[in-house]
Image 1 (cartoon, one colour):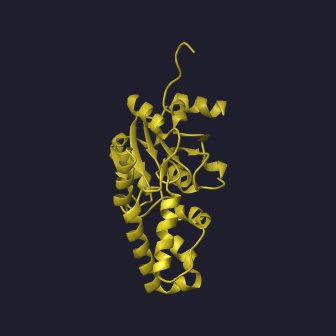
Image 2 (tube, helix red, strand yellow; image 1 turned 90 degrees about the vertical axis):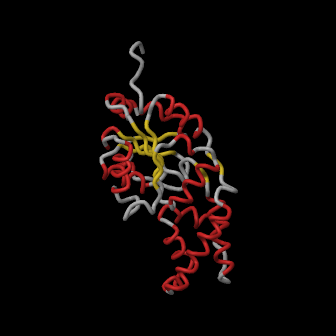
Image 3 (tube, one colour; image 1 turned 45 degrees about the vertical axis):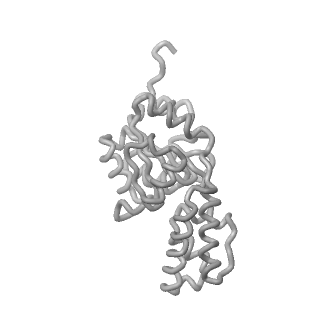
Length: 231
């Protein structure tokens, strides 16, 4: 860990790109309830929250496919389920979600230090902006991009590159913060460094893609600031 921190201190991050679900906000209850509402309306059996947690980083389309199984090859059923899921989610977005400990403290400190902050998520933009506003996190971010902002989503590096451009920073001085290998792969391919939170929905991680881990966003200052000269 010491050598990794030394590397960051030589080139501290000027900007952060932060993931949303599983990184800043625990949304699994909202997602599971919405998805099971959609399945119920189609007369299908509900799925366990564990499946939702396992699949959600890949996007709702993958979740629908996993839940429908062989029936998911029915394009009309797949599309209808996705439509019902999005409708149900829009009705409760944020209702059962909670902000993780350390998020507000960390973002407050980083903003006070003049660090540029962006939120980049695979969640559709309108849902992401509404959730950030409902949880009073929206004021921290000058840039918010959802999964519908670009032709592709994470783990493709394009969204990260475009977010750096929107922030006016270079990838080499931008730190991506997330909870999954999707975040890590996108960051590394874009030329950014990546720190993952130890919680969230990402499961086990390939350490080859990761520069560090934190218990919460309140620990991010160490990656953004030069050490005190007198230390």
